[in-house]
Length: 456
Image (cartoon, rainbow, N blue to C red; front, side, top):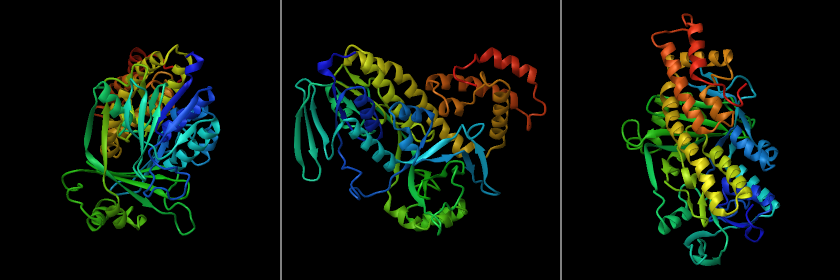
């Protein structure tokens, strides 16, 4: 364990990951100070804009459980059993995520979650300073300057403890670390962006469409999704190419957006009464993947969550991965003899797994927008479920490994590659499972896939 006199840490960022890490570390006996550039979200209307809800999976719930805050969060969460696919023609169809209601994900409002975690972090003993934007860091002198953006007033601190960056994809701590010693930073942006819209509650305050599902309107090169919030609303996200038709270069205003919905998402259009206004008030959001060669600066600073490995949102794992980071870093700090040792061990364990989920998130976009309504995909999905039923400890669906288990992301990616090859070869040229050679498949599955820890 790190020596008692140094058991203080400074966190940059009081968002989801920073607040959860503050709880975990405070409950281990660390003295935690947190600096956050924004105001306190518990103060009404401190910041305009809409909050985006998130998909909470088992990895994230496990981290909340370890911090002792799961019950408080789950009281605000809405269960999603699967994808409710809205085709161009025909009725919506639910594609379950798992085998039953024990294998689901949960929609939770970002602002609600942040407020809960902040409150519990303070109750655990963390000291949180709001309106403190990190401006400069002198790592050698142990000096940092923060700016209050309300009046441009500087606040200087001297620190003798390591800095932990949980300040998101635009991390100011990462920028300061880069200036000290380049981290090998590289960001790849998608050629797609997104717009946030909203489905309000019905006249009785209830949900206008099925609440216990993630709704998706797949349209090939683009798609629309909707996730439920506990107050009866849905957060709607439209993903479009930056160029082309349709694209953000051709759908330029609310009127053109309404025409796009009338053509491609006609059942969603009447559910979004503020489509025109929201389209023109909310700028498109960028989608990108952040890669770093190194996450830490000796024992002086370390990055986690989006500050270290921002990813596209299409697997719903960004928050879950960041929460898993928090658990691992807290454990390394508890058992290491120095901060440098802890940070190095944390990076060694988490970096390959972050790279794996970043890759899977990119691939899941193709699946969501192009494949969920495809006959070949549906046949492979049917076979996947049957193979899981027959050999549940060996053939574990990709989504199950990523979402309902604690299987390292890198292991899930490796097994997914093997399983996808089995599914493609077994269904190639077939339109049903009637002609499947189950005896041959059993040999293939047992040869290629050893039992997976935690599968049942």
